[in-house]
Image (tube, rainbow, N blue to C red):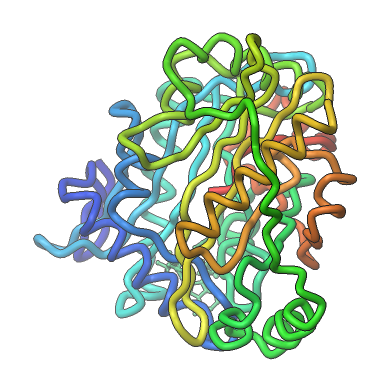
Length: 351
Ligand SMILES: CC(C)(COP(=O)(O)OP(=O)(O)OC[C@H]1O[C@@H](n2cnc3c(N)ncnc32)[C@H](O)[C@@H]1OP(=O)(O)O)[C@@H](O)C(=O)NCCC(=O)NCCS
């Protein structure tokens, strides 16, 4: 346990709903009103933060009041030609009313203590490259972290008219207007044969597809069947569909993410869209089904990071465009025998 004047850092002891509200409040308060920023809900946190009971949920409390938080998940990573144990962290938050009082630094020092105690090779997370983000300064500054290549989200409208109204930045609203005029938000009505919801018996086939896809990456999760099962299926929160023509030839795995712009809206984020051997027909069927499902759920936007595995040709054909800035990886507490700055082809979920 780490403590500082006025607060202590211990395991988080509240509900997913309280935590999602706290983290969302901190990010909402940090990012300017003309920047679209992510927000989260109880269902998403129940899966991504609380789904694995071994996760580190480090919280700073002032008396009984939650004033800071970081999430950490200990995982195996394939790093170059090695497999190492590391921590993936995200959702670093300090109460806007306590900013600059060392809340984040004290949480990070407890995270560092645990990384050292357990012999993990690093802590890693994504840089948020939008104006107002203090994360890069925090990790690269006082935490002496290192930056490495990252991933790039590609986006595609599902409801351009709505995005024209709700997006925070002027350039986003202008882009949405153009996308609407060009009808880039249309969703193909093609029939999607051979697609069905994931079932537990599909796990090994999905694992094989993902391992084959990520074989070309020099930094990715060292998937276990248990960890992949959580990624693909947890109380209906992520959606996973498989392409099954007697053999499982592809999968798509996605979930809801909330945003705060001028108004609140939701998007669908694709974590995996993988077709066996890059088969274009299978990939297209998976993508069409993904878009149809997200449209039906009322999402205004699709986010598909490069790490999802979908080919560039399919993304372009379906009207996706790359976001201007990549989400680079920020490493902290790196073991002396690892050079993470050389990593070039990471494939990690955007969290
Ligand atoms: C980033 C954040 C967690 C920092 O929390 P905090 O408790 O205020 O930070 P600390 O008081 O421990 O200060 C740590 C460092 O944060 C940065 N920082 C904090 N407040 C700052 C401010 N007002 N302006 C510039 N930098 C600031 C500095 O780098 C500071 O280090 P320094 O004192 O050596 O310069 C907090 O602002 C936050 O919740 N932001 C919203 C979410 C977010 O951006 N998370 C990170 C995503 S990777």
